[in-house]
Image (cartoon, rainbow, N blue to C red; front, top):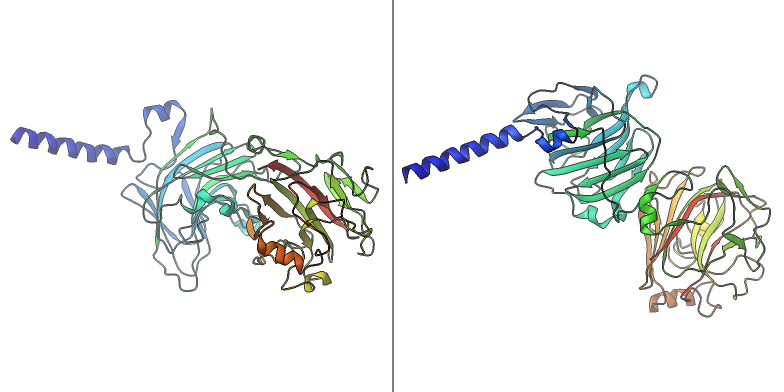
Length: 460
C-alpha cells in the first residue's frame, strides 16, 4: 500500500511538473512542422510596448495585461514582423474587458504619430458576442462582424481559457475560437506587420485593474497548410472576385467588372442602354435630374431561393434599389420594374426617406412595406463610400435584408402579415406581388448617379 501511495504521489507530481514544463513549449511534432514559440514563459523578450501605458507582466508562465485609467489603447507587440502565418494562443479575460490580438499591424511616425493600426481579432466577452470578428484598428473600423455566423454566439468561453487561431495566407484571413470557424475575410491592404496583445482603454464605469491573460503563443511561418474550407460566411473586399470558400459555397459573379453580359434592359431583350456604364470595375448609372427613367436592368436568369451580395456607393441625394422576384408581366406604367425592393437611398437628403409609413422607404428597408432597423452611424458608412447589402431568400420563404454585416429586415413571403402589408401599400393592385416561386433581379435607375460592384449570388 505504501509503495502504491508513493508511486501515485510521484506520478501526480511528475504530471504537474510536466504540465508546467509543457506550457509555452512545443511538441516534437510542432517543432518538426516549423512552429516557433513567441513567448518563452519567463519574461517579455522579443516584445515591446506601444502607445498606451497599460501594465504587462509575466506571472505563472502567462502574460498578464492590466487596465490603467486615463491611457489610450495599449499594445504589447512583437519586435519582428510577420506576413503569411498561422498563429495560435490561449487567453482568459475579465468579463468587463474588451481586448484583441493585432496582426499584420504597423506603428509608423507618419501615421497618427505612431498609432498602432491594422487587423485585429476581437476578444469580446460581452453578450454582443463578437469574439473572433476582425476589426481594423485606427483605420477602417469593423471589417468582419460575426453576427452573420451563428457559431460566434456560442464559441467563446466567458469564464475559462479560450484557444484562438488566425490563418493569414495571402489575401485570405481566417479566425477560429475554440475550434469553431468564425471569420473569413479576403483583403489585401496590409501584407505584413507585427503581432500585438491589446489592453483596451477604459472609460465610464469601467474599473482599472481588470486583467487579461495569454499563454502558449506560437506561430508557423513556413510550409503553411490552410485549414479545410467550411461554411463560415465570407466578406470579400477584393473587387469582383470569388474566393475559394465562396466557390465551395456556390457563389458566382453576376458582374465580372468588365461587362454587363449577365444583364438586359427591363421589358426588353436588348442589352443595357448607354446610361449603364462599366468603369474602373464598377457599374455606374449616369445621373439626370433624379426622376424616374424606366431604364432599369434585370438579370437574364430568374432566381428562387438565393443569397445575393452587392456593394453600393451613393452620391449625395441619390436614390436606387435592388429588386428581386421582379415580374415583367406587371404593368409599371413605363417606370421601374415591379418587384420586392431592397431600398438604396441617401436617407438624409432624399425626400423619399420621409414618405411611406414609419420609415419603410429608408435605406435597406423592404420598400414601402417594412422599415429597416437603423444602425449606429459608425456602421452605416458615409455617402460616397462603399456599403454592402445582402439579401437572403430561404426555401421556407423567410427573407432577410443585411446591411454591413447587420440583420436589418426579416419577414416571411406570402404569410398573412406579408399579404396585409401589401394590401396597404402601393403594390396592392398587383395580384400575386412578390409571391412567385422565381423572379428576376433588378438594379434600378432612378435618375441619380449610383455605383455597384461585387455582385454575386448563390442558390440556397
